[in-house]
Image (cartoon, rainbow, N blue to C red):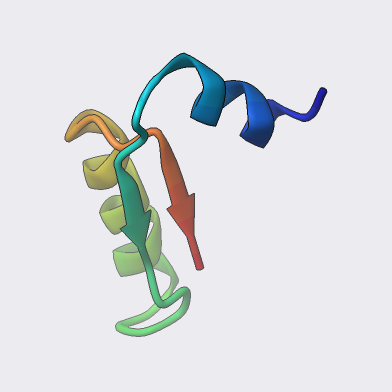
Length: 45
């Protein structure tokens, strides 16, 4: 079973979307960290 399948079986995931590279590498990293700290289960770029 994939990790993605496991997440959907365990809970209703919160999926965050991130446009990687928009605003620069540093901004992308900080935005990803903020998504994780905010509680997203999955983030997509």
